[in-house]
Structures are given as structure tokens and as C-alpha cells.
Length: 344
Image 1 (cartoon, rainbow, N blue to C red):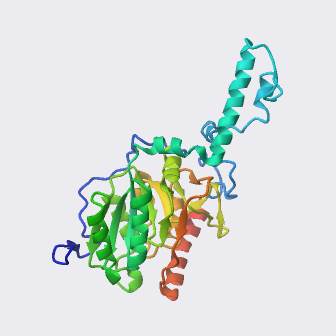
Image 2 (tube, helix red, strand yellow):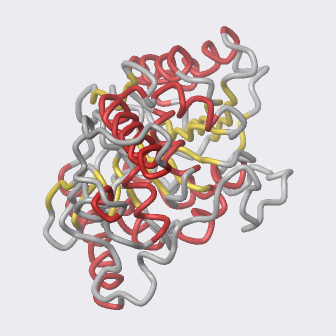
Image 3 (cartoon, helix red, strand yellow):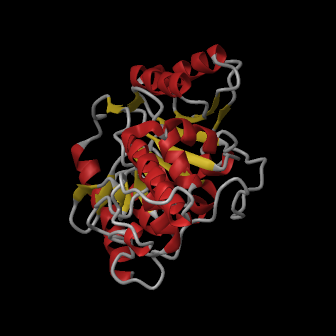
């Protein structure tokens, strides 16, 4: 697309939003699980990063929805030892119960082995999903990142080009022309805050949320690439009741990576979130993304999870941002995280 044909808005704020976005939960998503965080102390979430309350097995999902713990030997409550080979009267109703239990255990074991992929795809097939990208340079990474989403998922890509730095906006236009209907691009003349201009992470991310009309919005960085379908497990977790699911979990208080399972916070390099929930939780005053993604996580009401099985995701490398800027803005964002932790 030529410069003359391209629509370039002067600022992020000037981009019009035609759709009215609200906080009404989409009908295709189950209600967010709130009971596990209500009335608790501290951050309101399990900070161990363990898998005990994750979403990896049918049994775990049942325990999460019922709020009860797994019984040591449910078969014993029915009068059986739990031995799958135990014999009895073929007409005995209790024997049928035992066999049903054995089948459930076998199904759960298969689920643990990753055979739930097709089930997850069926669960999310009617859920609309869009990947939001802030593009501020590194055109080669932009091409690889966007192409990986197109190749491995059915999600739409919503890209906000800040200043066409190093021709990154041109790459987006080329991808949009090659893949009609899969890539939507908004160009602004305003350059990123970290380059000395005024386009901030918070305002830009908020604009993408308001431009999106999907059920699930995916925050993704252009330094992240999919080597397979990493979105279906994330979206499936949201469909099942999580408010957000991501590639990496973090304990903000301890400053360490945690997961899989239920986690206190998620990083923004790849995070699927209920769009309606994110609208009110995003820190729009954040100039820079590092630690602002943690602040977003803490602002969400509900369960945050990292899927049990490893996701096919790769980092292309770090994007060079001036060290003094990173330190200053990351610290400012982390101060906001600490305030949220102390207030919870």
C-alpha cells in the first residue's frame, strides 16, 4: 500500500471507535470463576504457582467448580477397594458405578496426556478471538510474529502501527493484503513514548481493546512467535471460567516465575483475557509495558491460569529499549503493582 493510499491518524487517541464496548459478559463464555478469590486475604490468589488448582484435568475442573477437595478413594465410599479388577455381580448397580469411575479415571489420564486438544478446539470454535499487537519497529520480527498467528490459529490480528518505524507499518500492510480478513491495521503518526514521543503502552492497549469486538482479546508482543496452536488452550481456559490465561505466570511479590496452574499474575507477552473484564482493569496511564501487564493481571477479578501442558511459543529475542528508560518506567509500574498488593 502506498503512503498516499494509507490512512494515517495523527495520534492514538484520534482513532475513532465505531463499536460501543461495554462490560456485558459475552454469552459464549461461562461466567468467570470468582468464588476462589472472594473473601481471601493477601493477593487473593494462590501464590505457590502449583498445579493443584489448575485447569489441566477434568477432575481439577470439577474441583474448581464445586469448591471441594478430591476424595482419597471415592470408590471406597461406594463399597469398593478401588481396584479396577475387582469382581462382583454383573447386575449389581454398585459394579456399574465402579466401572463408571474406572472409565472416568482412564479419561482423566488421557486428558493429562494431551488428548484434550480436539475437545478444546470444539469448545472454542464459536468464541471470537483477536490478537492485539503494538508495532513500534523491528519489521522482521513483526512479519514472523503475525505470520505465526495466521499459520497456526483462526484469530484475527489487530495491529496498531506507531510511526511506521523502520518500515514495520509497511510490513503490516503487506500482510493485510496477502491475508484479507485476517489482519486489520491502524497507522498513527505518533511515535512510541520510549522513543521520546507520546504514544504510551496504556493508551495504545486501551485503544486496541475498544477497537476489538471479540469475546477474547489476546495481548501479544511482536517478539513472541507461535510454533503451533498456542491460543486454543488459553482461550479454552477462559471459556471454562478463568478471567485470563497466559503463557507465563509470575508471583509479583516474590519476583519469580510460577505455574502451571493457578497463578497470581500473567505476563503480557502472550495473555488471553475476557475483553469485557480487561476494559476496566487495564492501567491506561502506563507509559511502558513492563510490569504494567502485572498491574493489569492484579486488576482482573477472577482466576488467572497457565495451562498444564507446555505451549509452542518462542521468544525471538529482546527488543532494545534504552536501559535508563526501562528502569525508570518499569519501576514506576512496579510501584503501582505494590500498591495493589498492599491494598488487597
